[in-house]
Length: 274
Ligand code: DGL
Image (cartoon, rainbow, N blue to C red; front, top):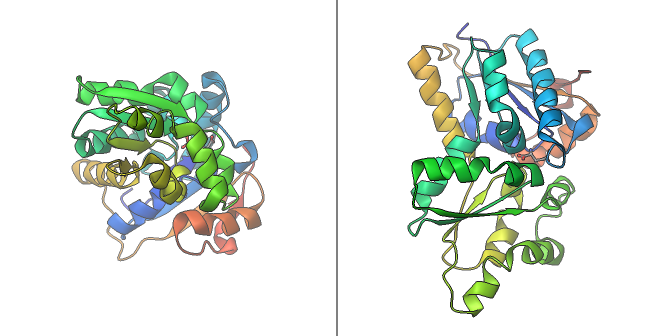
């Protein structure tokens, strides 16, 4: 059991930013990642559809045998975490929202926190609820930023286009109130797995004094803690990563490199049907 891989899934390649952090903090663990690229984006879909997709993807990972599941997608965590935990009570299931909320509460001094994510994550208010549970005096503002997803997928992460779109979404939270002399959030949560790639453009538009946080590192810490407390740590010397995708293995391998930070060999990517 201990040497089974940790399973992770995302709607596409974005969750590889979470895998990246997990590989660094748990080098002995192996990982099996499934990117449901055929049905990306999840963020524009209804909660029911996202929950159905998440259950299908998880069933495929469970079939391959995993010891723990990480929902490496904010949209799927926000929409489906309780359904997944109910469906698979025998393995630990960890989402990215709670760790992201913890990172935000630790980073914010003023308690004014902005959250940017997909339409579905913002609509469901999962981050607002998680942050307010940890810090009841916090003031949370959520902004859907759907165009950041295709921008990251296309590698358009810096320069006038990325900054222009970021300004369109974020000026009303940062630039406009600042010009009026009003207080602005001191913490901005990148509550979508794609957004860390756009961090430079987003930070430029948010301006000084705003700390950007994402859930990758805190999720990795939560997984490590859970493995330890459940006695599930790997006894291997070095772990390996394997990848499943629901569409175009070559594109997954090519795009994946930008999100993972090192090459994804196409020979490690298997096309699956759900
Ligand atoms: N992976 C999704 C998330 O973290 C973003 C992409 C999508 O909309 O499917 O919210």
